[in-house]
Image (cartoon, rainbow, N blue to C red; front, side, top):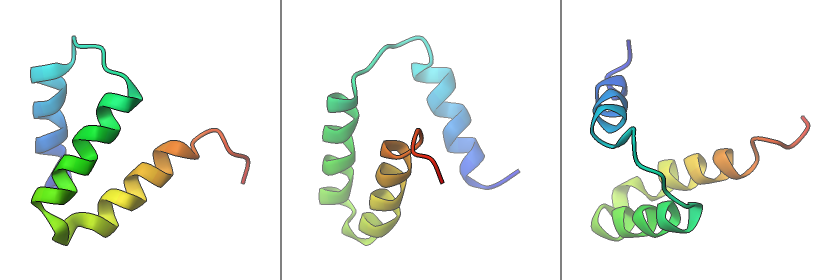
Length: 57
């Protein structure tokens, strides 16, 4: 188990029943990076990965 799994599990437990849009998610990611600029690169990588999930290799 990775350390981040705890945060992911908390997210699923606390917000797992909610429905969100990608616009909402994008705004939360921007807000997170504004508050935590040291996480800009990992956040960008996550967003890019999510955006390209359906792309063929």
